[in-house]
Amino acid sequence: MSTSQDWITRGDQHITTTYGRYPLVAVKGEGCWLWDADGNKYLDFLAGVAVNNLGHCHPKVVEALQRQAATLIHCSNYYHIPSQIELAEILCEHSFGDRVFFCNSGAEANEAAMKLVRKYSAEKHGENRFEVITALASFHGRTIGTISATGQDAVRKGFTPVVPGFKYVPFGDIDAMRSAISPNTCAVMLEPVQGEGGVNVPPEGYLKAVRQLCDEQDLLLVFDEVQVGCGRTGTLFAYQHDEIAPDIMTLAKALAGGPPIGAMVATEEVAATFVPGTHGSTFGGNPLMTSAAVAAMRCLLDDGVLDNCVAMGDYLREQLEALSSRFSFAGAVRGRGLILGLQLETPGADIVKQAMAKGLLINCTAGSVLRFVPPLIVSREEIDQAMTILGEVLSEVEKNR
Ligand SMILES: *Cc1c(COP(=O)(O)O)cnc(C)c1O
Image (tube, rainbow, N blue to C red; front, top):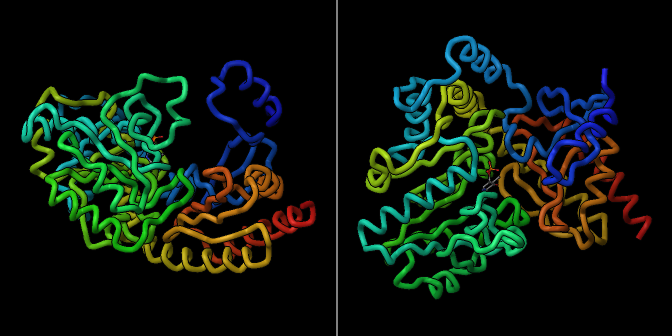
């Protein structure tokens, strides 16, 4: 058996250096727990960055994958695919949407959305209406198109020229949004809660005001729910907290309960723009991933997962607030449901490493925000265990300040 160090040494030879990886070699997962190659066990409050919403290797997802893998793994979108149709039905029945385009990742789902808003607007208003307004501190993916949409200069560094036609405004500022609209604007694209940007929840009424503005100006509204969709905030989709709906929504991360998938959900009127030949994906909506997603979505809807998310989200928030009040360098707790951030007045990277050494996996976004995105099936006992570890780590940080 190879040890963790063996794998790390080998990986260092041939894997691109795109990630600053922690010295953990993941080999097994079950529920909220992850094991490394040396047999150590970790409480996983990162959950593959909000992918494993049902925990690792949920039995219903495993069963669907095994059954489908032995039946039909891939065909082509030249043919009809039953599990893809079932998944589209589920997504449309439980959202504003009428039609779904399937792909394989969040970035691809956003690429589909950006192509769709351009084409829809070009046909309706002429070729000059192509600009999309997005938010500062947003994150929409790593392709050339989605780094162009992302409101962070750092992700574009070294990759210019990027795709033209994006404007960035402060998240939560409706006046800035209104001022940014020009005759060239065709759409607004936002995360209902910003994930990578530091777990930022907009002010009450902001999303509704954006919707109104889009209606007044005849702009399309795109919600990137890649991270906060699929139950993460306690409702099936995050926009459902605000009594409004977008024209387009993108999903990925947790949609299939672990396996890679992406989806763009749109209204009939907007989706109709994608006539044959305008967009596509070889693997998009393939039988294997969509079977897993059907199982994952049914589990989310039928097994009380959303209720648990709301209850455990409240509990985790209380615990984090209690913890924060004990330390001078810890500040506000932000978020919704089970995407929570703890603002620190100190960089969070070392805290993440120390928590890992004690058996708790979390991460840090925006430099100094500890992010908690545990599986939505997490229990009170598991939250208590996590808080004990985090309390120990923060105590040590306080001592050494
Ligand atoms: C993760 C993420 C993406 C990118 O998804 P990939 O599957 O990595 O391409 C896009 N938008 C948001 C909000 C995300 O959190």
